[in-house]
Length: 257
Length: 115
Image (tube, rainbow over all chains, first blue to last red):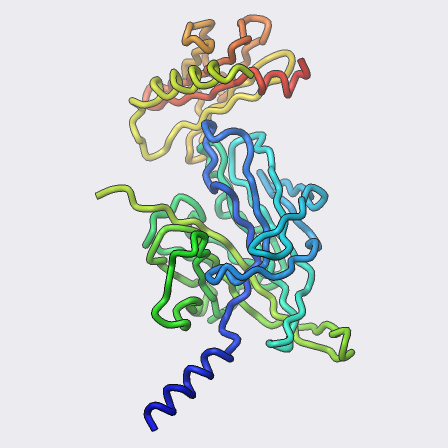
């Protein structure tokens, strides 16, 4: 009986749609110094970042950068590129002045049959240029957004990261936030699939806290269901829409003793 | 751009910058350039403008070209015609307690001036 239970559990785990989806904007470096040059290289994708399993990222609805309060449309500059064996994009962006540049993407709705829902992940990342971190706490006013309470770059591994989950500009009490490591080198392993995606809840003020165990890029996705539906073409049925507020943050390797 | 010049300039700048103390609020120095002048900006990482400071302009071989001071709005203007910028410019700002630098490369000048 014990053996059967084990096998049953294994098959349940294998069949479970456990993989978390993430919109991704990954810069070559979130802290560009003048010795690094005058550009940042960005890679955009839609994936399961721990498994390095890419999915189709259609040309986004919008892609922009915000710096010193001014938003610039960069959609036309995206170059198609195969990322994690599927469609993604790249962009080299020139940094003309110091300060924090916030890159943000609204993808097209992604139909996920396994979840019987559409997925829209409003995705962003923060890049600081030339030693000036002003603007690191900028709120863009996206449909849904994680507003950083910790500076979203220059964090040591095992530092906590805190943010406020917002939907339509309002904090979301007890919002669920999924956290996942971008397993860039493919070296990270887990003792249990449940540990691929960590989950924390925000408090009553929409504030969540997480401390990653290692350096590297970590994605935070706060998920809510939209107050509208979209029509799924093949069935003609109205389906729920999962709205994700995604922020990517790189934690740096501790170099002290 | 002559790569060795950039490297020399960067190395020189780093040597200058290396002794800088890690103060709680760092000095952020930036310089933009057009066909007429280099505009130097200095502020602290707190966002406060650096209202006083000495500005030194060196070439790619670390030779001092000119000196000036910050205006109260945290800027200084150096006419391009007043300095030999062919090897790039190293702009140092020293406020007394803090100092930092910015490198203007010949590429920066060419890009913004079209020469």
